[in-house]
Length: 176
Image (cartoon, rainbow, N blue to C red):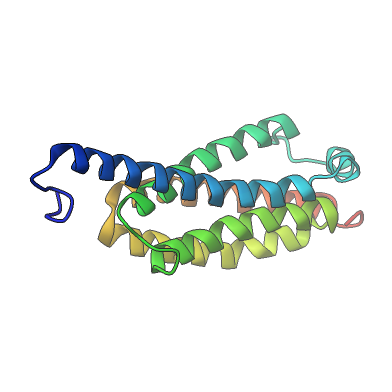
């Protein structure tokens, strides 16, 4: 442990560690909730109905499965956020800035799909999203390999997302 945490008073040390853990958990949860709220506001009933009416590739998921994918996404990125904050990273650290960008762009992508109703623009936004995610993975790989691996899992998911988004866009090109 770091010298500033380890001291002669074990009770004070435990209290400080607990405080750091709760602070990290609070910040990580807050970051996730902001992104979730953006997604929830975007996913209107009309937008969901529109999405359900689109033609889909054979390997497509139902909207309910997409919600499960979203839950896994938030578990992964919630863990990454927690680990970064628990390491003492501030909101202005490179890893937290990139993480915040990834989460906000992800939330905004639902706005593009459900409010703006554009599979084409959703597909196109995945490319800059992937670049920012790669930058995050690169930064994380030098400070927290576990978080880098978790972010990499989501990066590999993006290959399916790109393939799926492109095919869905092409199937519905006249409707979008």
